[in-house]
Length: 322
Image 1: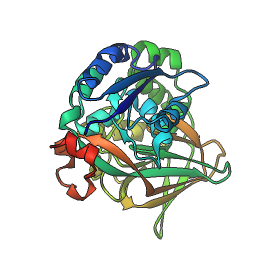
Image 2: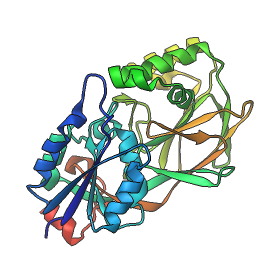
Image 3: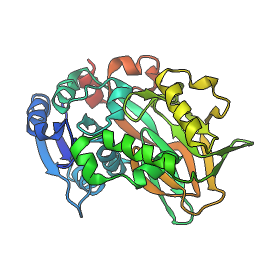
Image 4: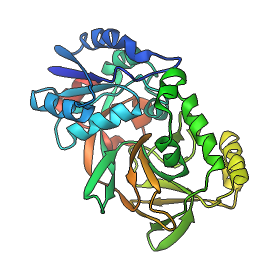
């Protein structure tokens, strides 16, 4: 048995700057057609985002949803297939491509599509961030951040991002050094932590290939949580050096915890922003939890090696991994 229908949902604006990888979406579709009976190409539009398109594709009988774009496009498509039997195959073609660097999937949509027969279908427990004041929530595969990084996403120059890609994120982050850092409070179990940047993650890597939460993994049953206490721009420059040199654990103002649930509260400002998989999601207060919602995600074999209990053994998945 092969997948019967695949929907490639792509963001025509993704992969800006030096990459333009999304322009190869037709080639990616040709690769998928070697293994899937029917492949549809569906572009996103301002009023028809990837979540809506993914939900419609699932309802139309698509058993494989393949978002082609950045981590934000993948996250949007994820919202539309939660609770369904469809499988998710990300085709990385974005700016940071954290999903690809985390899992080992090629950072190229055509090469990622060609890997289909080698991938394993795994049941991934999703992270969810809830905004109680707004009565809404959002699922995520990778991470949820609050404070300095989400503020950088909030102030990101979209036109600059289209021209220079991930450099725009670093530029926006650097401008935060000249702003007042909003403070937040984390409740992790019975512990309360003060912070100006907190990341609740299912991914080792962050912002491309930086390792920020080394104990995280998409198939783990708990988040790896890191929080940075300092409000000093100078100290944050040191934090960045620590990330780059893998010596961040030497800084006293950085703490790591593991948890299935984290509560994040603003302490001195109503404008502490939250980002999910690199996209602005809302403002504090927020509650982040692991599961119980899951998604069936196709992942490279080496990434799944230590988690055999997460491998899906349906008929469709059996074809993929022999």
